[in-house]
Amino acid sequence: MADVPPSSGDLDRANYATIWDAVARAVPDRVAVHADGADVTYAAFEELAARLAATFVAHGLGPDSTVAIFMYNRVEYLTTLYAAYKIGAIPVNINFRYHGAELAELLEMSRPSALVYPSSLAAAVVGAAGRVPLPGLVLVVPDTAHDDADQAVGAADAVPPVPGVPFASALDAPPLPPHPRGPDHKIFMFTGGTTGRPKAVVWTHGNLFDSQLFSIYGSLPVDVPTSLDDVTQVAAREDLPRTVCLPLPPMMHATALFNVMNAMVLGGTVVFLTAARFDPRAAVRAVEEHGVTRLVVAGNAIVGPLVDALEAGAGDISCLNTVLSSGMVWSDDLKARLIAHAPGATLIDIIGSSEGGPFAYGVVRGPDDLPSRPRLAPGAVVLAPDLTPVHDVGETGMLAYRGAMPLGYHDDPARTAETYPVIDGVRHVMPGDWVRVLGDGYVEMLGRGSGVVNTGGEKVFPGEVEKVLLALPGVVDAVVLGLPDPRWGEVVTAVVVTAPGAPLTPEQVQDEVGRRLAGYKKPRRLYVVDELARSPSGKVDMHRLRRRITEVEVPVLVDPVAAPDTAPDAERTP
Image (cartoon, rainbow, N blue to C red; front, side):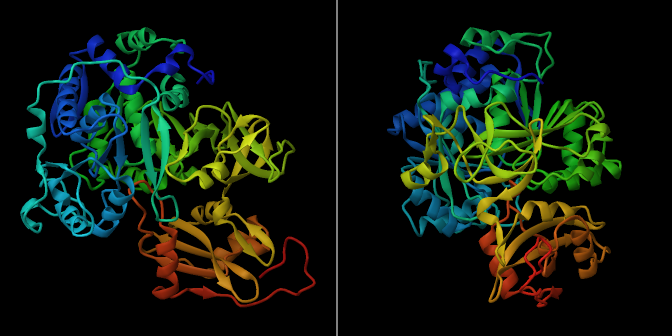
């Protein structure tokens, strides 16, 4: 993939709705979305969004109004997004696993003028309605066939009355005619990160499109477009490889949403699975049946079950040419197992965040590219705590990015100033990810600074310990964190999930970590659990996990042995 310039020239005035309108005019009969066994052409998709946009306007929505989308991946999600873009409204992504109180909190924070949700999540909406007023326009998508183990129920099972009116009724309005839209309309990306409390990162259409140029055009044999006409011509070309995108994580996760949006810029087809619950065998069948070329995953959380299904003979995924993941642990062993089934695919492990980036890419085109090493993206740098550049091999620093980025956090100027510092007159984004410099642009990921364990004055980055744990036979998932200790401040604690019938002993953990890392990095407390209860985007709510292991779970190992006070070197052991 070629580097892409940091600016798109005249195209930085673009808006996604304007681009999609132009693509729909250029390829009206091409399939935009395949969902629930039906195809929706670009012309039909644009008309659906235009009708919904007209209903939004009739209910008083306009620029900067917020539209809450509480839904799984399905065509109505994308239609709502498009309709919001058409009127300059701000779509608000909501985790579909939320229950009533959690939903109420986010509705209170985002103050939406409209809410769109499926009937299978009616119970949560009813629960939220008992805590906060619902917006004036509430649209219900009938989908009792779609379920989710955590909370979904059929509409008939919810507490009556089910709030809202049928989504289909909002499509009766005459289509809103296309009209010019600028690049300054906003997009919210609510992210809980590892804290569990949602916060909104605010993008503009222009900056988001600029930041996505590499992802959209970097793998194509074309010049980077500099005008809307150029974008449309690329999308309409029949000689270019057709993009068929299947997002396996939910679109409330930025990686899935942005890649779906990118596919539509290219005039590609987006494929949605039928059920909300992730079914790896269904995913394999969809790849094979629809000739999916671009698969969006969420690291080990998705790839693990997927390769298990492939190795059990679920189907053929050799049509893939790209598999993308961002911001999640994706171990080399799973990359090797996946590429064995998709030998023509390029695996792209993106180091990024909702706050901005990309910071680095780990690219695997075949077994010879393993072990994978992330390399800094154009515009990315490594900075010391004093915000000076770090260049020397072996030194550590924080990832930063200079380029198109969000405006900051919604209604949080203090956090915005901290995460988006201006250095030597240039605005940077620094979410707090630490790396070790390896040379020639390569870096080793160490972890988010907020998760660093301070044990007896030594700093332990969870990411490097997790990498060792995930390489142990039988370990399928792992998280490392610090727990309070009266002497050392914190002790390194590992929480792992093992495969059925694969016992894990404390000795294995300590021996393997001690063999590859300094002694003070060895976990002193080990918890073996059935699952880590990751979110659909693959993240772990660290607050809940801490409560769980301190109040419920029993550690396999608690090592109170203290090292001599005179041991100042890296092997000091708390």
